[in-house]
Image 1: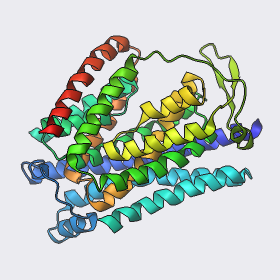
Image 2: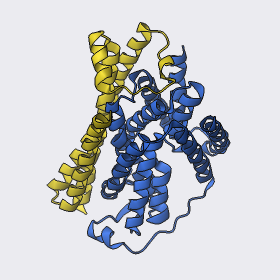
Image 3: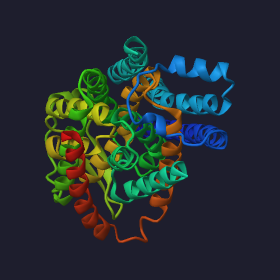
Length: 125
Length: 271
């Protein structure tokens, strides 16, 4: 099972890379959140009732009011949600390299669904 | 001040989650809704983000001990991501009230599952799909002896994964409980393999709906930033102190807490 152990080794490399991704996004979130705390008082009071507001509107508002802490936090969150999607794409690549086309096709399909899910958020939003 | 407290609660959620083998979602959603009166939709979205963070950050350690079945994980992710997309669509059409009630049922179910003794009945035959996709594998036991295992009832397992995906998106959880049920219950995998493989899959499951919630604007940076940060820090601490804390005792206490919180969520849903 040499092929499987190579697969395992490469996937482990992907996971280490992902861990750095999580730390990078955590750093952005920390900076963003501390900035938010210094800037305004009660951050949570506005969320007692659900008022839909698409991410594009949140970013546009933060951009015009130069609210950098919010912008940095949003980038941190975007990095975070993208990490699993990236992992699935890299895993698909590993399966293709091993000429394991069934599993590669499955991984690519999962990747496609994950990408589609981003658009779903825009459509409905 | 409240924000710092939320950060502290999230550290606690991450810590307990790592200790008990649960995702943070089961603690974060009730904490945000019951203690902070945050609307459950924002709570679910923030919770999903923290599930992505913990699972992605810990994937390397699940792979390192050779218990995670990568091929099976990728195959079953097919079910969880499709389920998650369906769950996101369902969540857009039902009232917050229903989400509270569903969450209350989920908490009770989790409490019952925590009392369950997981039994091991390894299978000796592969389902045809498992042969075709080479889903069977080997794993090392505590003594370091390697065992072969086969994979049964693959279609049933995939179907339960679909449901796990729906519930993940609806409730903002990683759905590890349902994944484990599919893997060692239906597909007859060794317990250690099913736990590790489930943990490995959780990040992708949560990301499937988290990305949709994110662009729709439900992941509010004001809430998600302290929650995700706290959970990352807490689960790191929890994993470190795993061997020094009597997890069995905490587990018993936690079952009672889950039952009480379940009642409160039900109350909030009915009000």
